[in-house]
Length: 173
Image 1 (spheres, rainbow, N blue to C red):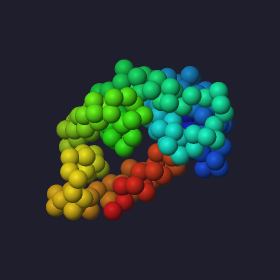
Image 2: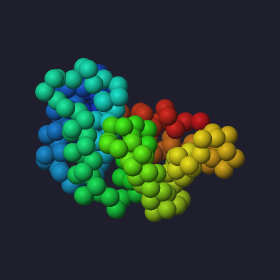
Image 3: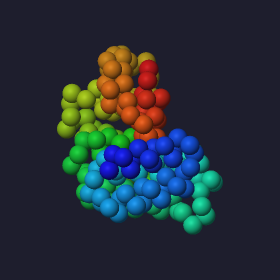
Image 4: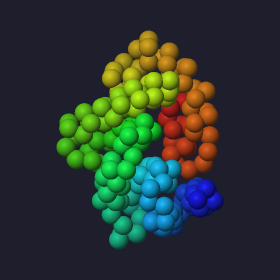
């Protein structure tokens, strides 16, 4: 499995998004209950919608597939704090991709709260949750947690793949 994901990450890095999509499709069929595969695939779909949707084969409806994967994730992985973090984060950034803006935005904040409460020692989750609660990026607690979370970010997202690359860039303070 790790070998196949590495191949997909290489395709992502090379900008071969249709091929990466096909790789994820095959891998999720082989291992439908593997959260690691699911999270990278879900994040891939989310990032493709925002970054390169026009480069995709016309037969691929990324938004429909993203929503399908979200429903699969809710059924299979909603008890995992990492699931709640990733989905809560992605929904909070682009809530309009998922439905009723106001309703879905509330859901994203709830998911970030669940992730933080179920894993209170995770500084990354706490930083993102605090950020979702304030418009003030200079909030003292938020800034302090952000500084403390940097080492965790370097460790947690040290691998390859769009998910790791994205969080290394976005969460660095």
